[in-house]
Length: 502
Image 1 (spheres, helix red, strand yellow):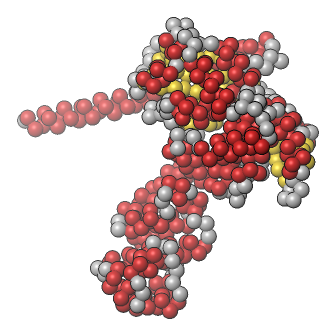
Image 2 (cartoon, rainbow, N blue to C red):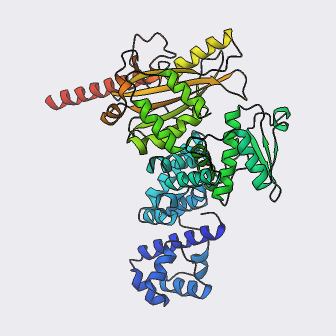
Image 3 (cartoon, helix red, strand yellow):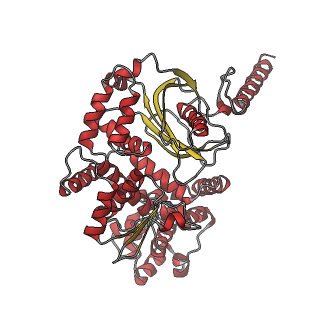
């Protein structure tokens, strides 16, 4: 719902339905009095239609109110919260249709209990403000829900990428280089590619890419990026050209999230890029062979990264798209952390959890993520290696059987850490976790490898009951507060029982 006309229709619909219900009138009674059909009146109440002035006069007469009161944007106090929702950036931007729902339907359900609905909406807005939850947070959350709803597998995008590879006459195992992809943009689409401006730019040197122009497209790509990262940017741009979204972002780093259409377009073009660079048939075959190893084979894993010319993040994210579909392992998660060398804080920058077990999440979460995860171990190891050899660009790989204490669930987790190309002094780690259920154990033989350590982990130090943790970063304050509250409740219950017995 994007414009003023939508808002006018919704406000009128809310008022009309509320006034009709207050008077105890049925749809057919008001429709008869206003000389319109019941279906048309229903469409008006749902905010889908806005009648002409003569019909508005008839509706006002049918309800026994002045015309000006009906068409005014002012509403009675019980509906004020719903009106706030109509004009809120959240409702205008949130992609309800993605989930088979329209904002009109949501508001229509709330009209029956307007005071409670208004209180709920105002509480929601207040929580959003308190925790600085901006519209883009909801849009990215909607995207993650969309991914999970589809198991992060989108056949139409797989087909688009496969068709593109076929047109380019690439074999099923042929991996295009950054140079080849750049040439397609330059030759077939008339792009001008510049890899020198961004690295030297005083303000934009941290940007990955920028696309400018309409008829004559120019693409600025940060030449400081690794070759595989540049290949992804070219492939994603080809994704935009192939999929032709109505709206798309023009920068490779988010500056401002303008609409969900842009968020979805960026996701689909990125998915396309991953499928072009890491073809499904070859990947599924390689994974089948890899899962047959009886022990964890780090050399084979590193070889796959090099064979597909992929960054760890690109490779892991492609795995979240293929493994649930090809192997039935649906309970997986992906996480990415950034870590500034020398600091004791870890910034969660990306998460996709398709499992039923809670994994780290949070917007501005002011707690200390568990230091026992394999990703944190990989970051510590990388920091030590970089002290002795700053030029070594090989990623650090660790694996672990992570037992989440609070949920009594065990995940097989692979973590890969490496330095960030555009942020000196900052390292990043990506983690891919598989719930060790029957499906996983049937498909993956090396889960029983005795060399893989099993470690008790938790979400944050503040919530962890482990007393003998040597790398704890904070006291279990949240856990202690919960225990204290439980003790208080038990004491209160004991006093009540004593009072009843007396």
